[in-house]
Length: 371
View (cartoon, rainbow, N blue to C red):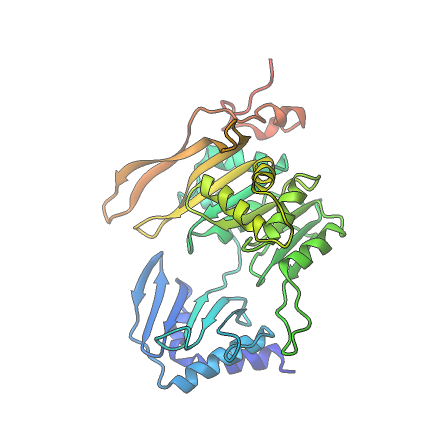
């Protein structure tokens, strides 16, 4: 079995044509679309590079080595694979004939997470009031769904928010491919595993979720829900494991709930639609919507409370914060702030009940004692 150092040298050898992009700290993603079309993302903007692979053979060898490092295979019956580089960068590979333009490798570069909520405020992704609200909501063990499109920064936001989790909690992180980097001392990282060539040995997110419930977690964090494990997560949220956090691909808070409902119905448990919807509605406390704007910036656009179902069995949501667009700065940068709507959430008095009075500075208009 190759060591990590040998894999690092091997993969860097085969990726030599794009090493200047991979080694540039300001580049967040490298997209290899066959041997001739290579793009990169820098400061939120996509650019086409001048780099090329000299042959399809070199690119295929790179794909094979990357997959092998993650104990996965690509080619033959496996048209695509999710993997990672030895430095932790996340990789997706898809090969012909599924890809008509040749082997495609997307590399989301790993950056050690050193930022927190304060960093999000500094970058303009959150307002100070919204940041304080989220800190308190996390301390109150509210179930939080981070919703957004591809490349909007959902995982980075989840990393930043997780920095506010108490260091006294036992946190279990479950992912398809390890990417989250929590800063707490008591964190257990679980990673799904693909099947071996003989079809055995597969470990799914659902398998790991069942394991996690037997490990006495104070909080469960799932990097992203994509399949039937959504049902297990939702059911755990409504049965005593509050404070769970995850991400989902969706364009609005309502779409996020519908997405979770649909994924729950994809499980191997036969569940009526109205039951799945009722469970999702009961489980979601907050949805944080994040968006990438045309200037490359990533901002939270909504923080929304889930309020269950109405009399017509439709999801009810109420925005607590929303992004207010205030025009454009010179250079094409968007201006705006995440402002409070004036709505007080259903748990407005809970911080006082749990003795979090000292945490309430910016959010005095949101969190108020019952009279």
